[in-house]
Image 1 (cartoon, helix red, strand yellow):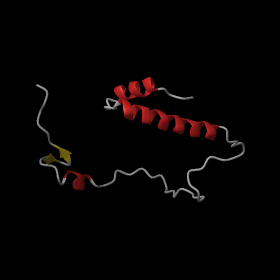
Image 2 (cartoon, one colour):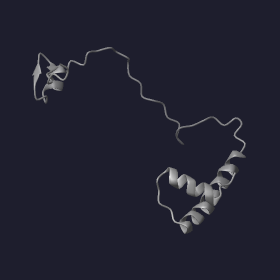
Image 3 (cartoon, one colour):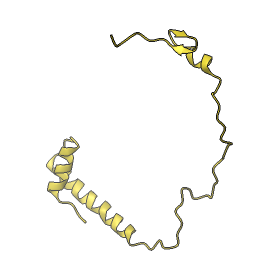
Image 4 (tube, one colour):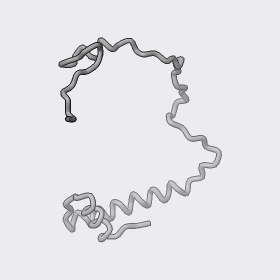
Length: 95
């Protein structure tokens, strides 16, 4: 896959990026180089290779799944300008 000058200008216009003709020509060759590299990567045989998220094998730290109310209602409304019985008090917006 490759892109031409018109495609680069169109993408720049859609992205609302001001690109001169000289910059568009340079970007065309750069994008084509990147696409060529991606095409090379698609040719790599990855059969039997497990997906990984890190180069070092790690396990996620797990905690027990416990339902709790947090018991922090007073702390949460402490910075509110106005509260009543651990609820935020806000001005009425619907009449």
